[in-house]
Length: 201
Image (tube, rainbow, N blue to C red; front, side, top):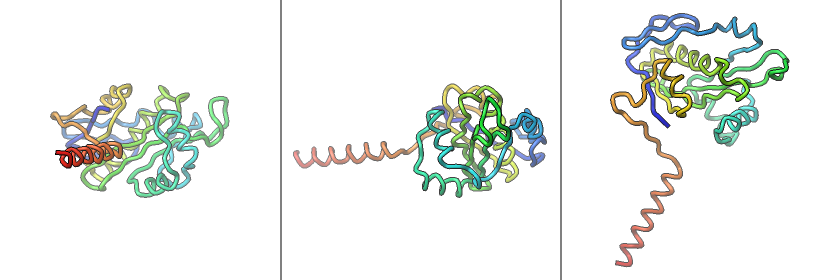
């Protein structure tokens, strides 16, 4: 996945719906306000309280993310800096009452840097503006803490969306890297093979 980041930001305003100014980039205002979405029965929620973990895992599965252990997922959300999720407040032919439509979260030290994770929108609601709306609200909320550097990993299919929001792929040649469990297992196997080779020699 490409690595992207916003860097060198300075705040102008710190509430939803107001402009956030950057030294080198201009973060977007909200494309649509909460009130405009509410007219469609779409409600943005903040915080992990009220998130149904089973429904969240179902959402992850529908967009191709792995399901997470519920206990670990609960702990992760409790320790997350910002959680924003979307529910449908009206029963309609497009969604069930209170159905989870989208989700996103940001990890942060609360001062200098943050990374955005798990941005997901139900397939039936993709290309409706909900993904962008989630990201806009995450960015504005992070800027309330004057966080200057915001990074994320992006699937190739959504890189253009992030670029429209001011993210830069591999900024200044910096490449994103991740240490994963399968990498650690591979290292152990390689180390074991090396020891076996030395023993034979």
